[in-house]
Image: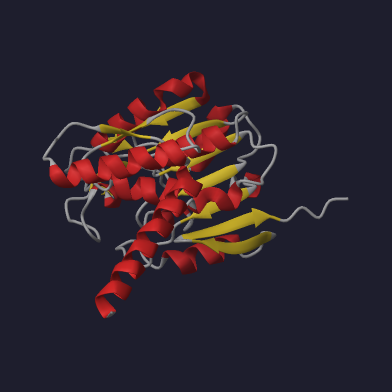
Length: 272
């Protein structure tokens, strides 16, 4: 009797997961997702494969045995960024820590009139982002560098952060005798180069470097940001990001909420 009950319970759990996937991704897209997950468990392949979502206008490439599938799950299955879906008049999105381009694909699909600037320091992630976002053409600008608060020479950090996988890549400032891998860029410069007056959405998932970005030199651009969606990392060598971020935006009229691991700040417009 107990075994029969367990079988029914497991069957019900699987059924609910399938329904959840279909609701999040779409029916056919969910079938592709399940097929690719099973195929990667059964076969050893190094070739990227395709994933689909109703929230991505174009197919997305995923590297096997990397964190890509987990990023896809967060964005398209759990739909962490759906907290922004009802926003209107979205012109410019700056995606700091774009990884392989999934979050940018979500924004480009959800907000058909927007343009996105993607910043990603890791070369392998960046190449995948280029591949995934190529169909959006002139709507996307990709920069292989790190976001920072001031001009600096940067390089990829050697030590592993958290699980050490592709979605945890960190950058650091170079020592005087080191050769840099990239020149840092700041948000104010990105806004000025965009030709627009405001940032509709600032998305930031930069593995602790947000503590650097919001530590200084933000006065010239923070007042131009309408919405912020940020993952705060308090366990990195950069310092307590939550405290630094809260201090920076304390006098800004934002409505705060949470969506999964994300802190969401939406601008409160009190104008008549």
